[in-house]
Image 1: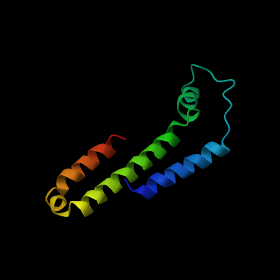
Image 2: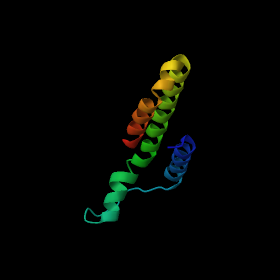
Image 3: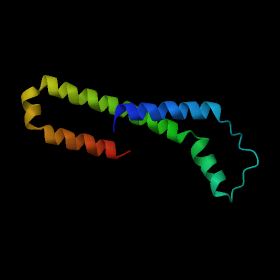
Image 4: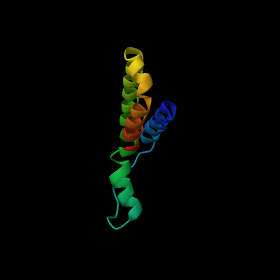
Length: 93
């Protein structure tokens, strides 16, 4: 995933969580929308998910570039392995 998209998502969710105030009073345990608000929005799970994914993406790109510079001969022979490893790691999210 593109780093700019991850950072845009994190910044938009930061803006939304700062401006949208939900106190949680009057919520019904039987309502699906109230359950979503309680379990997802109030815990700020999407915000933290974008931030963690963005951080891991930066770490992965830095590691890949380090290997490309330091081990350039090995890297040219094993590019497929590194790209498969990176895509598997990113698909986890």
